[in-house]
Structure formats: structure tokens, C-alpha cells
Length: 158
Ligand code: HEC
Image (cartoon, rainbow, N blue to C red):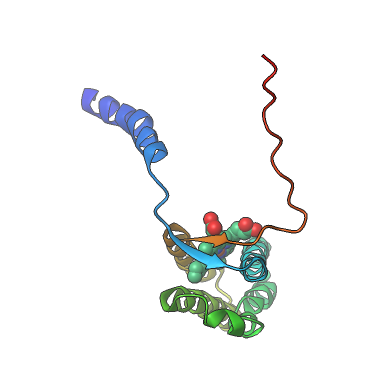
């Protein structure tokens, strides 16, 4: 019992401290402001689409599941990733493509099997791909946004 309490305490207090100390060693992708905007807009669409799929699962509306999942499929990838292909590393592109393929599979299975539990387990696997990429990459840009404001400097009043 004592051992369990001690290891629980270690988990709660020691691990978060270690995590805070960690440096950010995700690989940095250097993009222009337009490219960065493009990638991040797609990311936000994927988050929105994922929320809509979960909502549809909760309502047992498998046709809506298929509709929302299809929008995140390969069609989305074809919409404008061509110009990013040359600037993004191959493994980044491949990971991105496998996410789009997974959403197509979710859509097809939702139409045919109409099994919400199956959809949920597919979603879980797909979200692991999001997690994998997010822990490996970050985006940097050399451009300063047009409407960027400098952070107000601290007043040295004394
Ligand atoms: C191939 C890599 C990759 C995959 C796969 C991926 N992301 Fe991202 N995502 C990124 C990167 C890189 C960033 C920028 C992170 C940074 O700069 O700190 C990002 C940022 C985001 C953001 C923040 C957007 C913003 O406006 O700042 C959201 C939301 C997001 N991703 C959602 C998702 C979701 C949901 C999935 C899966 C369905 C997903 N991403 C899959 C690479 C990926």
C-alpha cells in the first residue's frame, strides 16, 4: 500500500517537473506565412471535422459520420497540398496522407457497416497519427504577419 502511495506521489509531482524542464526538440519546419496559414487552416478543419464525426456518432447518425469523414479524406489532400509537397519533408507528407486515407476508410466503413463502435476505434487510431506528427514537428516562419503588433515592453518606472 505504502509503495502504491509513494509511486503515485512520484507520478504526480516528479513527472510534471521533468516535463516542464524538457526542451522543445520537435523538428522545425520553416515555412512562409502563406504556407503556414495553409497548413494550420487544414489542421483546424481536421479538428472541426473530428468533432463533427464524434457528434454524429453520439447521435447514431452514420450517414453524417460518413459525410464528415469524407470531407477529411484524400479529396481534402488534393485541394492544395501540391504546392506544399516540395517544402514539406517526405515523412511529414506521408503521415499527412495516411491520416486522409484513414478518414476515407472511416467514411466507407460507416456507410457499409454502420457500426459506431468500429468508427470510434478507427477514430482513436487516426488520432494517434495526429499525436505522432504533433510530437515530431513544429512550424516556424520567417515572415512577420502584416498586422503583428510588438509585445508592449515592460515599463521601468522605478
Ligand atoms: C503530418 C503531420 C501532422 C498531422 C498528421 C496532423 N497534424 Fe496538426 N499540426 C501539425 C503541425 C506541425 C502543427 C503546428 C504545431 C506547432 O507549430 O507547434 C499542427 C497544428 C495543429 C493545430 C493547431 C492549429 C492552429 O491554428 O494553430 C490543430 C488544431 C491540429 N494540428 C489538429 C490536428 C488534428 C485533429 C489532426 C489529426 C486528425 C492533425 N492535426 C494531424 C502537424 C500535423
